[in-house]
Every structure is written in structure tokens, then in C-alpha cells.
Amino acid sequence: MIPIRPPTFFRRREEPEPPAAPRPTSPYERYVIEEMILRDHLAVDRSSLANERTFLAYVRTALASIIGGVSVMHFLSGLTMELFGIALVAGGIVAGLFGLRRFLWYRRRIARVQGRAPFPAHPLTQTAAPPPIVEPTKEAS
Image (tube, rainbow, N blue to C red; front, side, top):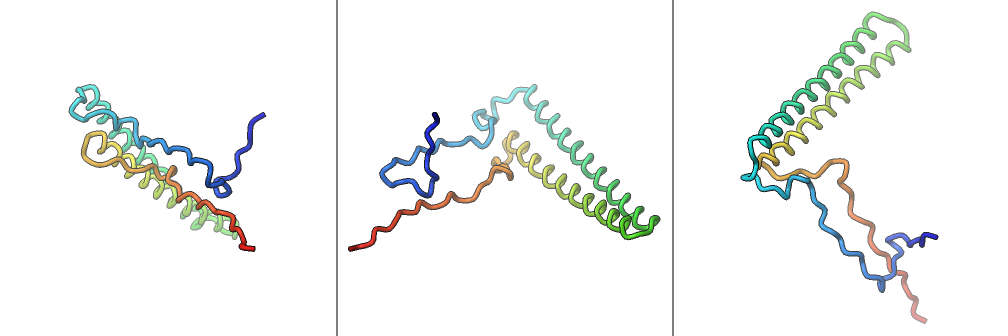
């Protein structure tokens, strides 16, 4: 049977807080940039080109979606087609913005591997501060 641990905000103060292990932000931090050989430099260049290629695919998808939505709204009539066209345009804008955000994030990571910038934190793993530990109050008798 697995013991059930109480939630963090109900933990007693007598229990020692588990030590926080330092979390690496990237697997490349352990390497020194001067130790990169030609193969490593070529791999970084391939990653940079792949990042640009992926960004262009996002742009192509976004433009196709926006053009399709405008075409649907222009050439077809009816409320359903208008809503479908608006949804296509909105989806294209969202796809373009997501692709731009992803491109910029990976470009910063690639620059860090090359030694030009610090590693950014991954946007999906950023968390808010943990909830505070709440002590039960003892009423004076």
C-alpha cells in the first residue's frame, strides 16, 4: 500500500522540507563551448536551418488558413459560412503567432548552445510560486 502524503499547504512544520535538487535548464550546460568540434558546429547549423524551415511551414499554414477563411467569407453566403471563415482566419492568426513564438524561443536556445546568450526557461515548464505553508492557529484558552 502506498502511503498518502498530505498536501503541501497542510504539512506540519516538524517535517523537514525535502531538499530541492538543482534542475538543469538544458542538457548542453555541462559542455564548454570551446570543446565543440566541427561535427558539433555543423549540428548546430542544421538545427538553425531546421528551425527556420519549421517557422516557414507555420507561416505557410497560417497564410493558407487566412486566405481560405477570407475566400469562404467572400464567395459563400450564409451565417454558417461566415462563422467558418472567421474561424479559419482566427486559426491562421493563432498558428502564425504560435509559430513565431516557437521560432524565437528555439533561436535563443540555439544561440545559447553557440555561446551567445543564456538559456531561456521553457515557457511550458514555468510555474507560479508554490502555495505557502499554512500553520493551524492555536487559540489561547
